[in-house]
Picture 1 (cartoon, protein in one colour):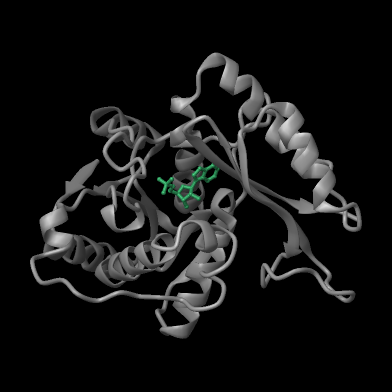
Picture 2 (tube, protein in one colour; picture 1 turned 90 degrees about the vertical axis):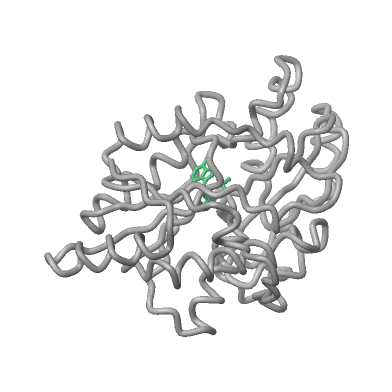
Length: 272
Ligand code: AMP
């Protein structure tokens, strides 16, 4: 597996692969890779032949007091996992290359970025939209894959690619879960055994949410399960993330909850 460290060498690699007729898939990650990330790589390989994941712990999507410093960093194991999964190359740019002195542009997707996650982490989607736009323009892949685990993020990225006419197909990949239904997340490593016992209730409570049965009941269940704080737990229109209307076809239950210092998010489609 080739390690690509600069924008120039990324562009050269992609140009060369294109010249030989390959399609390129791109998988953005912040490292600390688990089976969820690797599933994106597998899907990328299926859909495009060449898959280039990137690892970049993006400081711009962390707010003051969030877990940027303690975020797990496991580069050597990550590279090993990517190679075994079949990625032909990995992009590992330096922060200095990505955000040189004087960098002053922000990509901001209004509306969908301002609710749910955006309401609780106001810096977050600007950070994500800015880095993903930069990375897509650096690589110009045929497709880029994102997990449904971060469902709102997937919608934000679909919107920015449409609005900015970036010629990349955005593909969502279903959430990979452990044997207890807990959505895999790099942040799950923060959980103690007792906290894990609480965390595995989240997907079950989300699965029990039906249109019409109010979010209040789900909040009560989350509190009873031992979650310390609920940022939100609600059913939304799956396309706009606004409250569903009478004629809304597809709905999604989304939640962000805290156990001690760990914040977990998850979401599931809602069936009637
Ligand atoms: P992250 O490194 O947390 O920014 O995640 C990188 C990509 O992996 C994002 O598109 C996430 O949505 C996706 N991802 C994270 N966890 C999972 C999971 N459990 N299943 C599927 N995709 C995931």
